[in-house]
Amino acid sequence: MGLVGAACLGPVRELYPPQAGEATVIVHVVRHGWHSGLVIRRDQIPAGAWPEPGHFSAARFLEVGWGDRAFYQSADAGVALAIEASFASAGSVLHVTGLDRPPAEHFAHAEITAVELSARGAEAVARFVARAYERDPAGAPIDLGPGLYPGSRFYAATGRYSLFYTCNSWIADALRAGGCPITPAWALTGGNLAFQAGRCGPPAPRYP
Image 1 (cartoon, one colour):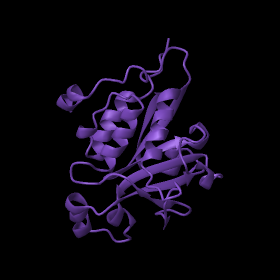
Image 2: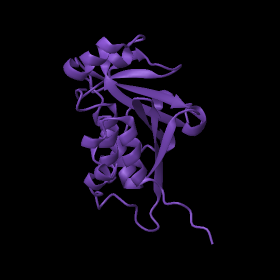
Image 3: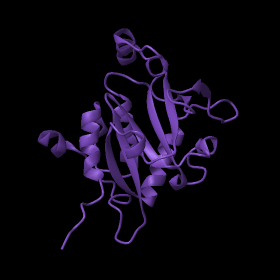
């Protein structure tokens, strides 16, 4: 881990770390075993920066994940689909879930990492997610139907999943867009993504 930490890219100076007195936004990386999701409070997504908040108007938080279309949407994804996704992915999807509780309460058994962004960095993350939506000729997101949880949805996505670019790499790219000192090339697994994301967490409280 020390070698990986030493290899991490530095912060994007104009975005991270937040300047003294600057408003900040906390986002969360949620590790669901191999797969990870990114949770953002819905009212902290800048208007127009992400096309889907209006479709989840009752939700307090939104979780978004990205991955191989066949594997992610399969109700019985196994080894064969995992191999196909790693070497011959035919397309990608975004999975968007509305949460009515904070992620630590909703995903009680998941590993959750808090990341503190500047307001500008959070907007950059939201716009990164928006660019990941594949669009129809009218410019609207392409809805692919119900997701994995009640009320969640799948949407066609840009980008190509592979052995060397995973769902975790994609979230690392999103955090890097927000200015975090994180190296997406090292974030192939949920464990390394969480380790690197921890470098972007809020400072520990100081006690007298």
